[in-house]
Length: 239
Image (cartoon, rainbow, N blue to C red; front, side, top):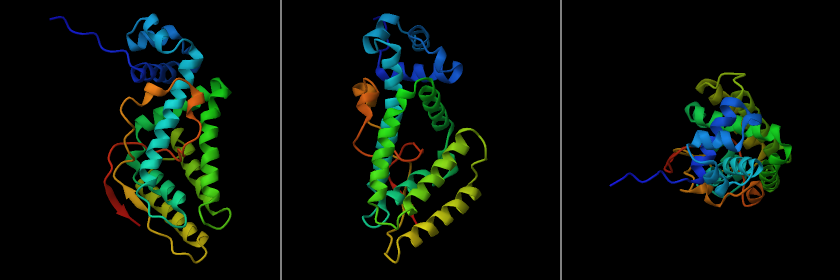
């Protein structure tokens, strides 16, 4: 009995598109180059993504959607109370250096390359950060506390993506300790529930790209927040 051909899935095509962007840059991404990288016909690719713009939009949308799902998974483990969104950021982004892995770095670099090539592709990320700003504003902390902690984590992300400063466990522990001090101070005498660290950062739903047709579908519905991704779901420890 002959072997069945490998199905053409959205994830397979988007993985190939990411590889093209990483290896050759966003300007080199064409429908022909992605079809070749995915080992599919151009017609098969066009059935899913009829233009380069739709393909780039879906690629960005998938990355942002995965971040949103991972963040919400970690948020679900955090007790209600002051600073819940900030505590989610800490648990999501400041756990262990090994979770800041090569896969995550590559996807972050893809996101930067794609949005630089077409600034309109930054809209899903803007939507995400707008949701995030709204959540932080209602986080029950002194004004500026949540925003300062967000800026610290975003700065760590930037440094790590471009290899500006090594991400070591000692460095991460020191920064996290100061961030926890700021969180406690920003609560202004309120009792802050513990930060619950999760083993991994959630697992994106199977076939997550099936409903991603373009960047316009990424807006709304939660926050991405931070950078970490992975597998798992059991509570590991709390601070």
